[in-house]
Image (cartoon, rainbow, N blue to C red):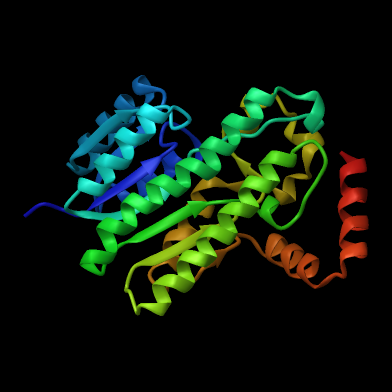
Length: 260
């Protein structure tokens, strides 16, 4: 009997790779990312270890043709059980001094790709009244800082989008679950790609392991919890920020930006 299928974008590294390793024992996988060689290496590992059916789909989700192909594949997957929208990247620098092309790519990847793939998945899942979507956002959705305007804005959009989906699914009493996963600083290639010194960015106590982030996400998925913020420090930070009057919140964010 065919197993349920989990689709993971951004599966070639970081949190996406950990999701693949955690899910392979239970699901067949469709792994999506730009780097086909890495996907194939990961697929071979998971097939050997778990006997899963692992399919790789090399795609640049900022490219319209590639995005349409992935969306079509998701919509037509008869055994679709889970979509993890993990593909993403960061950039540094003041907004007006950075490349507009990079800023636009970030919005296409975090916003447009998440929207299109979620739409395809929900058309599939809601009709069968089963399945789930995990949108990998960030604590940056709640706490802004200079040098990452588009990143914070797009992650904020992801959390608002996921909350809206949650409410709509509840309104029709659907069993489909959606989750906004909002990790803080996490050990992965994310910051290496940005050429950021982790020690200067944040103290070691604030850095999370990707395995812990994924564990917290999957543990909470079955219960249908909407926002998952791994780590007590980040839970406390978001709780505090959400209660501050706007002038105090802005002062807090400005002070944090100066320290960096």
